[in-house]
Image 1 (cartoon, rainbow, N blue to C red):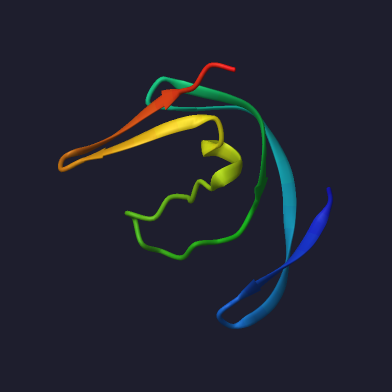
Image 2 (cartoon, rainbow, N blue to C red):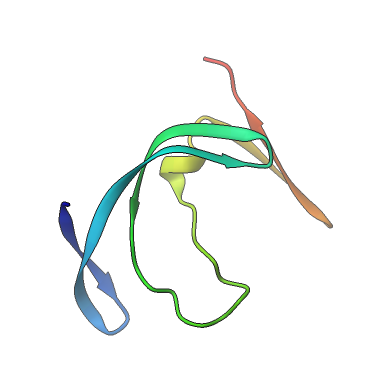
Length: 74
């Protein structure tokens, strides 16, 4: 497993880099998403973090009560 160095508020750390074969959020599915594995603490509301490598090629619409993801064609 490949490990990379990332910078945190407490300084640099080495973390595993993985490929998630298929990731689906709200019916929008993305394949082969690069991700790093890092403990985010004990907050039950913080289960993970998605970045640009997941959201590229999507339109995000923010409403007062929801986030709408739409996959763009092409």
